[in-house]
Image 1 (cartoon, one colour):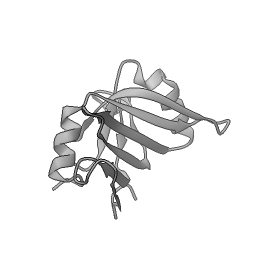
Image 2 (cartoon, rainbow, N blue to C red):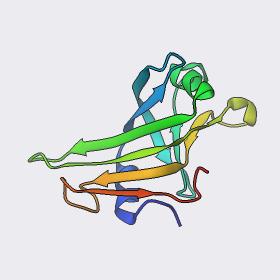
Image 3 (cartoon, helix red, strand yellow):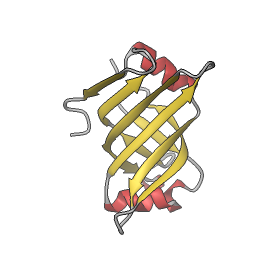
Image 4 (cartoon, rainbow, N blue to C red):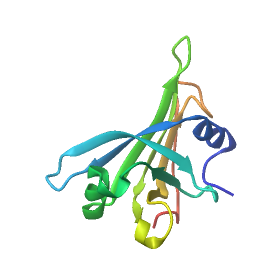
Length: 131
């Protein structure tokens, strides 16, 4: 069983892009759009992309593994919905065999407009995952 509700899993599967925030060595935030997928076991999110190992986000995460990501959208007539995931990134390099990726086991999940109405947040810590 995964850590996302059925509705959250369906929503994540319907989306193509997330915005990911990392922290650079100078302490400044860096936010970029990325492609992602929920891992087959449902216990993490995998960030993938072209030249991932040469990206600023990869360099940032090699120094500071804290990561936050938001997957969201707005449906007509403007009710927002989305999921924020916070955790500690695990870098999976091509040297490990296979496709480079950034694995994000969620430590905290906040959603709105999915299992709740658009202006109510559902927040939870995920015990034991990412620890």
